[in-house]
Length: 105
Image 1 (spheres, rainbow, N blue to C red):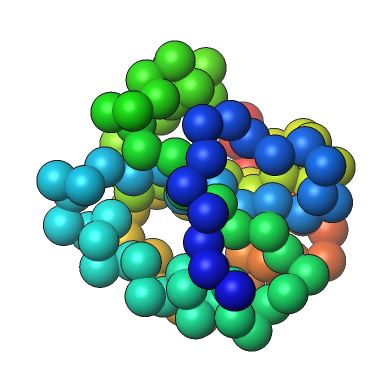
Image 2: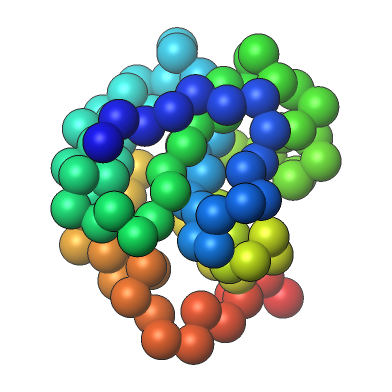
């Protein structure tokens, strides 16, 4: 399963992970194969990416100040956010969190 580049957050999927990125961002590029691997393993999660240079209005709407930034949405609502280069194990733990409670205080 490939990771789709989108211009908006998909709301039709139950669980969506959005990676905000830019082509000039080396940590964003480094995270690409990690997310591709997860996309192939976890067919139950839709993973998409949004380029902040191509979609600055979406980045602004979600308060993206640093990239890469992963946001996990459940049923259209943000439940988790992780900024910076994240390893596969940490992303899988983010996805497996039973409560998916927001850590945005």
